[in-house]
Structure formats: C-alpha cells, structure tokens
Amino acid sequence: MAVPARQTQRRIGVAQRPKLRLRPEHLLCVFVAIVFGVQYFVFRGADVPPPTSTGQGERPSPPKSPQQLQQLRKSLADSLHSANNIHDENPSSSPPADFPPHYTLFSTSCSSPQNWQSFVFFFFAHKVRQPGHVIRIASGCTPQQQEELTAFHESTVSKLSPDFHVHFTPDFTNVSGDNYKYYNKPFGVRHWLEHWLRYEEKVRSGDDAERTEAEDSIVMILDPDMALMRPLTYDFTDSNVLIHKSKRGPPKVKKVMHGQPWASLYAFGDGECSILLECSFWTR
Image (cartoon, rainbow, N blue to C red; front, top):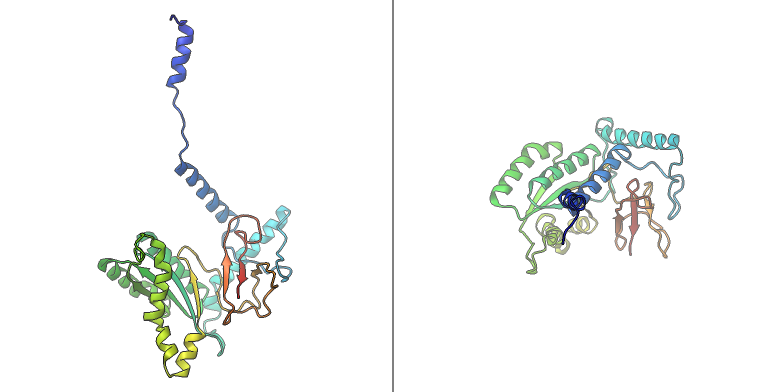
C-alpha cells in the first residue's frame, strides 16, 4: 500500500523520539531528597518547644503565619544550642540518688554505613549527656571487622565517655532458617541481657542489691539512624512529649515502671506524631 511521504516522515519522527521512562529508584531518590530537604531547611536541630497545654492528646497549634514559623525555627535552634552546650554548662551534674540504672541500646550490623551511624549516635549521646550506659550491639561481624571496630571504639568512641560500649553477638539472621536479618535486633538484645548485663544471674543470686538493680534497670532500645536531641530517661513528668490517646486515659504517673512500659511512634507528616514532635504512648 502506498503511503504519502509526509505521513511516512511523521511516523518515522515519532518512532525515533527518545522516551523518558521513570523508574522506581528515580521516584525514591526524589522522595528522599524532598524529605531530607524539609528536615534540613525547616526542622534542623529540632527539639520540641514546650506545648501550651499538657492535656491528653493536645498539641501545639501549627504556625499560621511567617512570623510564627520564624519564631518556631528560633525556638528549635535555641533548644539545640542548649543541648550542645549542656556538657560545658553542667560539668558536674549527676542524676539523683534514686535514679535507676539506664541502658540505651541500639542494634547494628558491622557494615560501613552503620559504623558511621553508630559514631553519630554516640556523639549526640555525649552532647546531651545521656545518663547511664550507651551500648552498640553489633551482630554478625567477621573476626577482622570485630578487631577493627574494637580498635576504633577504644581509640575514639570511649574517649567521649567510659560508659559507651560495644557488645558483639553472633549472626542471628538464620536463627529460624528463613534468612531474616532483623532477627539480630531481638536476639541481639537477649544476648546482651544474658552475657553483658547478666540479668538472670543477678535476679537469681542471693544478693538483694544485685537483684534489685537488675529488676529496676531501665532498658531503652533505639536504632542507629537516630540522634538524641536531649537526654532520654524513664521520667516523663516534666517532659513535653505528647501522650497518645487511649480509652484508659493518661497514665497517673508519667514514668516507666514495672507493668508500665513506654514506646514512641515515629512518622512523617503534619499529624500528632509529625516530624516536629515526639509522640509517646504507654501500655499496661
């Protein structure tokens, strides 16, 4: 069949045009860039300014004008500045006598990304004077990785505080035969309880002081990609965290106690648990 020359050229031109194909990784990169851009330019150094009310489920009103937003940014910057200087301003400050032992844990592999994440975690724990012990639980290291990590910890991390530690565990990825790397977190914590804290040994011992210390210890489990903007303790009495709504109502005592653990919700967005706010809930 004969085709007009002009129509043939048009078809050839269309066929030869390059096509732009968006791949999932392109969209992911754009999303990550937007999220980090928002955090850096708007919420950098974010510690939470005290809310206007401490009632259950209430939160500060979002800024409605450029002036309010500027004031919020200044408040966040001042909070971070105070946290960064707390070491120098209170060099001799120490917890009260009845303050329970605190253990801040975070679970990692021995990869290079999680090595520098861990160093940042330790650095900010040092900056805000996080009470108690801060322990990196490193799972599945090769002998060479363990040797290098130990040397770096002793030469650098331990200089920040003698209460900063690294605890090595086996690789629990295949503990159930299904190759699930996130098993390292719960099983790593159990390994730490058994071999570092010696929890069962202390609880069953005849030493009342050791048993009480083990039973009353506060254990906080975080992730290596987090950074402390202020000390994290068992007592939320004077804290500005938002208490998640519950049919049981708010806790009468805003502290971690036997039978009353606490946890946090983390999310991005403009809701109660937004990028600006720390939202906690308690369970019993």
